[in-house]
Length: 520
Image (tube, rainbow, N blue to C red; front, side):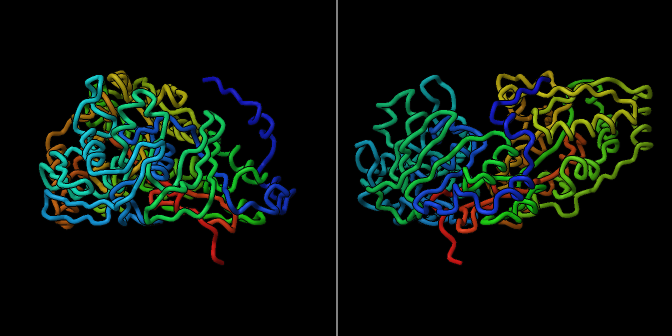
């Protein structure tokens, strides 16, 4: 793998955060801050502004600002509040009635937001697109049968089965954004690059690879009131570069490495906050490939690798250990999950019993980041102790994530993976079903009992029953030994002391409409 530094990275390369803090005090760039706008760092550029095909949190956070849903998340909470809907009533397990606020208008001259737009927006998820393919987030609306329009501003969402996750996974999330049917039909392929909405902000400018600018929508008539006139987003991929830019006063808010939190918090006009994450980081084998099709080999891997050592060596001892799929904040958390400690002799015995007393060679594929390379090197050293020789393949981000397309993952041997979590356990479990083999189930694990539990959990309304279902599902993941959990992550952020960020509990999603000045 070859690392190429940008000119900006090279210039900053010899400067530490501590140096910026020591030199600066309050930097002139923000000594007299313009409180009508803020500049936030995002880790990548915008990619797809179609809510049904968005590429990730960066897109979604902007989409949320410009487009309304019937409901939206409350700031800092997994609970929701009314947005475009004046009324929203769960009539039965399979029927939700809505009534829209009058006078909501789409930007760009596309007219009033109506129940027909709601129907079009939601039913897109259950119908193939113009090329006959499902939209990217089709699974968010799997339970939808159809939307019935009962008046210009009223309708009924009719489900095929109960769907307790619908509010958090679809309605309040990106898949619940209401788009203009007229704009979609007129813009065609340009729809994904042109953000038309009825929400608090408009996308005033988007200069690829440089910045985007959100500006208050003067015609917005909804209930959510943004504080800042403008929000400017600057894509900076490297975390260290972003932290230096923050120290130099170029940005007002950025995600940071938790390891740098203490140093950054000592700087003038800087506040550091941490949010426990609900991500899931793990590594595991392709169970279809020999020798990993033998559960004893997979068990040996799990005992050979020192997870606590990884947390110390690659995460500075600051991140919590994960022992199962679901994080402690989520329904279905398995608090009694086994904690596997490193046992080299037991791992060697398992390999010997499986006919691999002399070990074997394999390849570990990772995304090329400093942290994942550190993890990979620890795994490589640990497995060498039991006779497994590991080659590390570090792919740049686009190539790595392209493994989720067209069955490109079928040739993987070992892989290190990090997925972002959502607020309902059904979102997490879906990626490990047989249906996801060839897409995001890179372990190619196939367990009908797990698939049945996933389906049952997604349609069970009683929370206590859902807890039992998801614990049983995680036990099956554990028995497979195909998933060696590392951490659920921590999200840390630096902001100006006068700025209150609008970060949701997963840490990956931000409500720009909730960013405000602190009252203290």
